[in-house]
Length: 139
Length: 116
Ligand SMILES: Nc1ncnc2c1ncn2[C@@H]1O[C@H](COP(=O)(O)OP(=O)(O)OP(=O)(O)O)[C@@H](O)[C@H]1O
Ligand SMILES: [Mg+2]
Image (cartoon, rainbow over all chains, first blue to last red; front, side, top):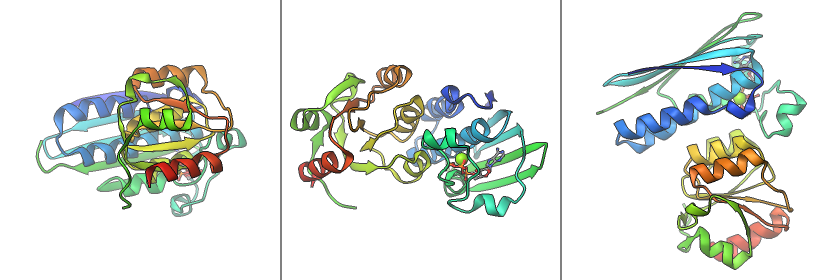
């Protein structure tokens, strides 16, 4: 199964749309409740990062018998130092974004902790790409 | 994990005199504990299914998190009211959006007494 969603930078009212759609789909397919929850948490954080830090992005989801693969590609400022960005507490979120309760600098760690495989690549001035994989025992 | 008293959302609404802003259909859900934070990714990372979430954040993303994490309800503190789209989303998802005029410290103290 294949799904794609667009994300618009700055539009917090739509942040989380792809993750809530994915949750509905996975609940029908997968009995392992935990995998569903972990995967939607990871996707939600990735979505919010595009909204908070980039200009626009696309979410590409492929559900297979053995795994769920999610790619989130954005056009945006990119990340200069990925290992620093991965540190809990590091954030460049704007004041406005922080007022909403984002900007704890925990999103990327949440993604890492809630996926089986997590890759992040970024080019400054171009954008950022994430790949999140959850392996399935049975489907 | 601590084992709490079995209480439903409707029980704590009555006991604590909470306002129900929306999501009435979810008040029969059981509360497994609570989580207090105004940092959304902290809640995303650490809150557990069935917990009741106390916060002063009043926007729609609060609902998105509550729903993705299967939290039992949200309590807005200090007289805060949900933004319109947050209240609507609570209705759609069936997650009760509750309110109190008390501070987080006071309401959580009482909540803990009830649940422990
Ligand atoms: N898609 C992205 N484009 C550009 N920068 C990003 C992107 N994702 C993350 N970053 C950078 O990495 C930092 C850390 O991201 P992380 O998600 O861990 O925390 P946050 O988004 O700042 O806050 P939180 O997720 O806790 O609300 C961000 O502050 C930002 O500087
Ligand atoms: Mg983030």
